[in-house]
Image 1 (cartoon, rainbow, N blue to C red):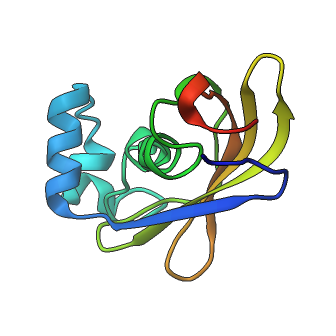
Image 2: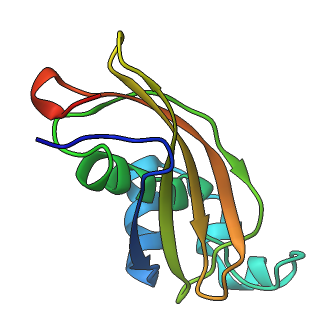
Length: 138
């Protein structure tokens, strides 16, 4: 059985591709040209297409649903603050750190962060996750 503790961490990584941009635009319906039109994006402050913010934050779903707290856990709440753009070819590492444990309600509060391959913080926030009865000692 898994045991959780304050300070416990987990992470996962993914390289963001052109396909990810296209698939996310189709799935979400967000066809903002800053994400899908290279000519338009050249005229922006970023000088190239940037990833949808929620594409980047979706990496937190893998982190929390698979790694920490993992199997059977349910999202209760998520705050997100976008700190830097993500581009095609960036490798993003999502990291979670347990900050607080509410044993009575079986809720973990985690610091959630995403970093690019250069170590730049691109996203930060907190998540609250409900851990199932068979999901470990809390």
